[in-house]
Image (cartoon, rainbow, N blue to C red):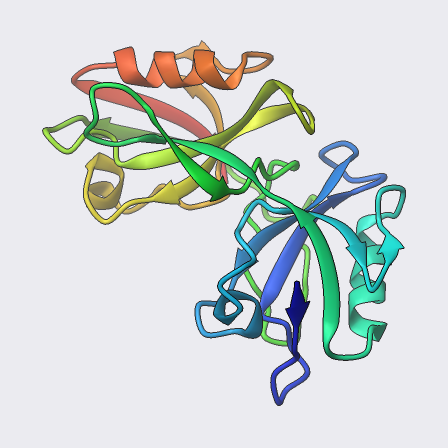
Length: 214
């Protein structure tokens, strides 16, 4: 896909991953996009997509900073080769639904906000562990997750992909996209598969305590 910079030279996206990260080595992933930025307006790129090449240059063995520099130096329009994946939604359905073309995962345990100048990555600063108590109602928990042990992109933690407009998470207002889920009602999610995390969340009823790294 081709993405043209805006008048400020921004692509309107932020990335996560790369070699030598505080959260461990991982693929380069689109972490977030500004809603009115060039990346989002392309209607092709998705949060969680893995970036494979930039203007034909592979990024597989590059550090996060190297990829940021490559994106900043690249002439517009920028040609990105990406790989898209699946996502499982925890909503009101009796069983999880699979949505195509949602990203595979965010590979490091930090929330990464888009930056107007193009890209910023907070790295190991600003992380906070906290517990959020949700009351599950008729609209369910109202968020989707990505990641898990045995992922096609490596063994990854469980992350919040999307918080929906309806559901316990939206009503509470504290859970954010990119938060890492550490435990549910005291049960650790470390080392479990995506499907196991879905089942734990589906089977949690009533008052649910989520321990998160945000």
